[in-house]
Length: 440
Ligand SMILES: Cc1ncc(COP(=O)(O)O)c(C=O)c1O
Image (cartoon, rainbow, N blue to C red; front, top):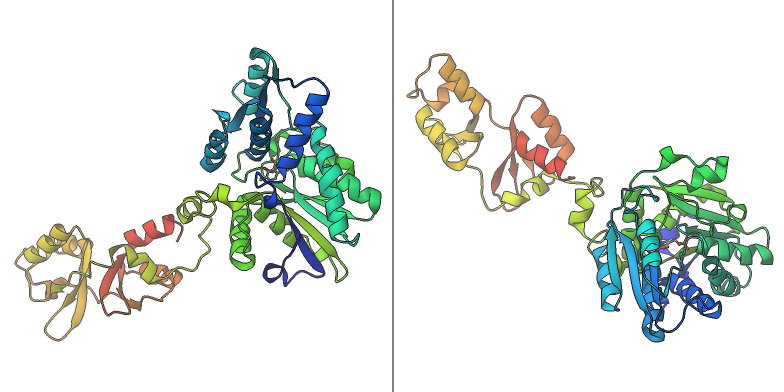
């Protein structure tokens, strides 16, 4: 159990984290994986030489892989293609065979990771399909271990338990134990947009319209697993993909906890419900797994930017010209003929340029000014000075992108950015648009 400090300053009461990456497979799912295997052994469903087949978002597969290595079973995991490559590589390293299945198909579609696991189970002799969704050994593991640990580690003072919900094993097992010890402990489940849990809990309606693709891993479902005991859950809260990812990064930076994606969602869900806490609250939020499985995803700026998850980061004119910082603005001379100006634009592949004379910057020129002059019957011998536009607005590298957008919107096709080292760069409307599209 770890006390949360810097991220929790605006939450009343005490906020503790049950950090589950200390398990040998770096997630809480080690607990239920071992329980499912050993319960199956006791029931005679798993025998020497058996093959375990499971559909997993990765962490259950990891727990099963560790058990399978030690106990000598073959393991096949079916995984949806949205799961991180790191999770698949690690499972392969532990000897598991992976079948990658499409994410965006209905659970009963023959290619879904549930259906493929069922089919392989039917085809492969002496195979066992634990089915973590409906196998109640899953929640029994958390009733037997995670719940009592949380109770003891808070000396029975816990008032709220907050956790992401996938199969429902963690929340239901822990909730059953805690509510037996103190029926007043509040149990909050964290759900995703695109999942059916929250609405089902509140209305009893399984609404297929709620189901759509999302990128958060491990929480939310398009089915109702038997392991979710809705009667023990006091409230569900939905968290967006973006908020979950950003908060996981915040937990790493501020608390030194490198956590998985759903941990960010769990903490964000708690934040969204903070108005329900008070100074006497003792909150435990369970963090499912370690961040090493997400280095190519939420801890990768390009991945974040591609999804627009970093677009609230403040960006400046300096950022927008950073890509061509080594190529200063091309200047055109006021006394040059238009033929030279056209040649310069063509040579450097640019659409506008500042114009200067012996004294300094006196104007600017762009494609439409040149075309306008030619349309009016001016010849290519005309001097740039005779047709040039007013100088480009000038900004420094710290000017916000919003201000640059405003300047280019009011008639100017570009601005001139001066960097701290004195070099000058043209930031065109076109480049500005590309920067914005990259999530700036
Ligand atoms: C990363 C992660 N978060 C949350 C969960 C949800 O836990 P549970 O299935 O016990 O509801 C899982 C389960 O696979 C998970 O892997």
